[in-house]
Image (cartoon, rainbow, N blue to C red; front, top):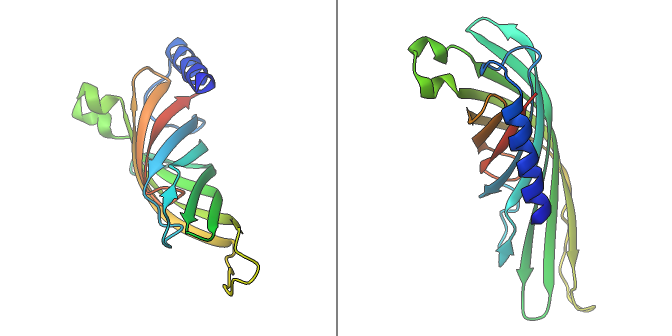
Amino acid sequence: MKKAIRVLLVFIVLGSSVANAQNFVRGTNVISAGIGIGSAIGSYTHSSQSPGFSIQYERGVWDVPGPGVISLGGYLGIKSYRYKHNNYTENWNYTVIGIRGAYHYNDLKRFNNKFLDKLDVYGGVMVSFNILNYTNDYPSNYPYNNDYNSAPGASLFVGGRYFITNNFAVYSELGYGVSILNIGVSLKF
């Protein structure tokens, strides 16, 4: 926990020391870390689950009419489930590795609103590979098929970042990864 607080403080200090425009433009780099709730993976019965944890990176690569910018980047997320029964325990540990592309809408400044000036709204698509590590401690005579596999995935997402400083933001995102709803912090550089 102390390490997480230190990392957050470094993000805040670095974020407040560098000045850039709020718009997400070509060449902008953002790294985000988040925690999430809900999930579309692991839809089986479970008695406990961890929150989803994710980290993502994106870079603005193409200016497009609209006005906006297309970004490309990567995603890494983890989530675990546990089912505890009288005679055995099952564990599903997911790691999601993905490539994301997003469209960032850059025309909110035309509304001349201080809140909207600090907002980066986006939507996109991700292709991923969902790596599953399944374990159990079934009794040796238990007749159960535990045929769980890793699988490719695809998803849509929408989100927004609110910049507290020129380079430090909080974000919220809806979509599929390890969680359906993610919240977290972002650092733009």
